[in-house]
Length: 363
Image 1 (cartoon, rainbow, N blue to C red):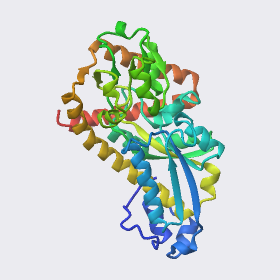
Image 2 (cartoon, helix red, strand yellow):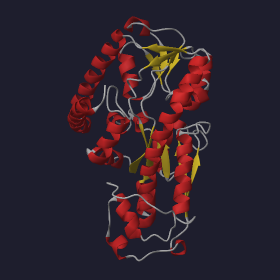
Image 3 (tube, rainbow, N blue to C red):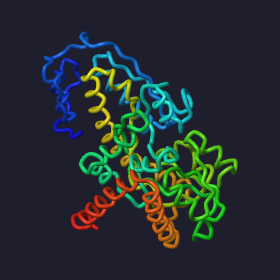
Image 4 (cartoon, rainbow, N blue to C red):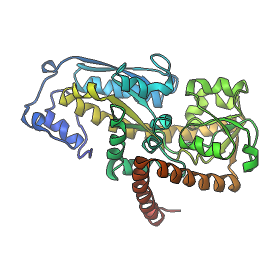
């Protein structure tokens, strides 16, 4: 899905061929169709379940922006109504809702569903993996989107990258953790393969949606929690429940979130609406990352000024976590052919792009 040009107008009078060029595809319908007006297309209403609390105006705000752009570009004829986590389905059941067809689409992180297939983690991020820029390079140019399409097909859905949080933080802790020994028995909210790594180091891993983290941390049901980064963590009030804010977020170096679309709903969608949704998803993917990078800097200043203790992970923990991460990948690869295939390709890409980054980046 290479985007060769940006859309320069929101008017629906664009021909479908122009829209198809934005998504890097032209089929017989879009080649043959003349410029179309909104009145020539059907009115379609979709519901979108999300994994995010409404209060998070960057990640949930990205969803609202996506819906607004789709509406505007279709002349108001294709409308997507987003719902916050828990309004239609719990935040960690968005894939299930889209798969079943109870909603037409959802916005979520694929690594929430590694219990269904551990390879779904590649769509979001892996510990000690790719940063946001590298992740986009892998998805759009390194075969990542194609690999994820094959996985999503098993669930009857399609996926489009539609946001990235950038490099995340290393979590909030009620007590300091200086060595691996300090992690033993610790109750921590952390999803994805990062959770598997922490579990291998002795942590009691909990799976909680964002809306439940603060109360669990405040009331002592968990001892530590990771969410996103300074801006969203501040909004959730996590700094009120735990003092120590660790870095770096080695398990979330650049987390992609996806729009998931039910396959049958997609096939029933007019081609021009498909092209609009593809294009808008890539636009939101770019803008969300820019907003997080800008907002996290100011939020971190406020948190530290308010008494938060910014603490780096010790080398003991980082080395043990990195070793455990790649052992877990090898183990999953031994058990799952599709994990192994993606992992081998992803590893080659990671090695090559890391070598390039070491050469061209100013240290």
